[in-house]
Image 1 (cartoon, rainbow, N blue to C red):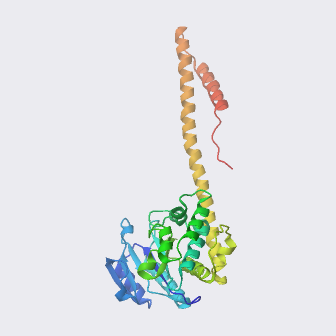
Image 2 (image 1 turned 135 degrees about the vertical axis):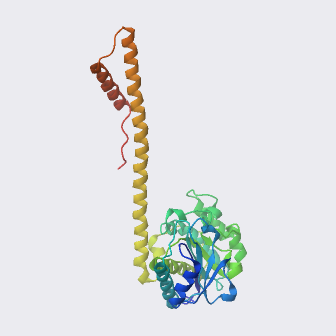
Image 3 (image 1 turned 90 degrees about the vertical axis):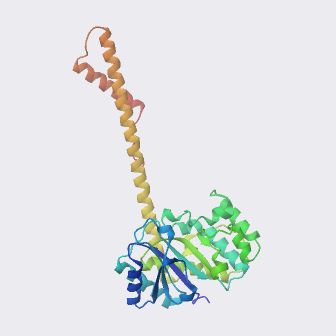
Length: 338
């Protein structure tokens, strides 16, 4: 089942009427039905792509969720590309609220394999996060599996989570119980009971065919790794090279590029945050300096009035210069950290 494992996707997007989405996909040769008045997947139309309503996108203009039928292998990846390109062509868009959910067939995984997959994901959750923007690292619809199982985000959380998985019963319910029987996790085991699948909810919404395909390949690769391995251990070591090895060789360059793209974005966000921090500090610094100069000027004028005289402009300028120099010496000007 390694190369032909079934998978399905749920693409959340907006900006186009549901019927226009269905028409565009049908025109591209992808059988699609408009079920915008309904929520979720309809088993009676399992062989078609389905355009449905998604309540989590209610603040977006003309939101929809596009649910695929079960796809397999190269033909499935080719269909994903056709669908993504058709959505872009018809004018669909994604926003921060949108997600890309991937279901992977898990009917051939026994309890130990499910435990191995859970432990594998928990160990690699940080690396998986580096492939997604911060909005998907933890939100109400894709919470942290490590936090759910390990009870925190500290350095020991991964170890505690893996140990809890190792000690759980080797069954579907045993693994589900580790994550609180809760579907809103990055890796959702609750779909096992309803669909016989494991659902990745972590990915950000995208209409980029390359990004969709490489993420699906990574999900498939992790399931295959869990299926082929033996035993369940409590190791917590991880590495990027081991994670990237779980996708086909021809997709690793794309995975690396995605990681570099997000690393650069993280650097840009950090720099922007630092500039904003310095700007806030500078505004406070300017206000405090102006206040110090005002108080010095006021005190000098009060002293002059006691002497029955008025400060000359030159005297007031000297007072301001001295007060400014004293403030600058005592309170360094904020600077951007290197």
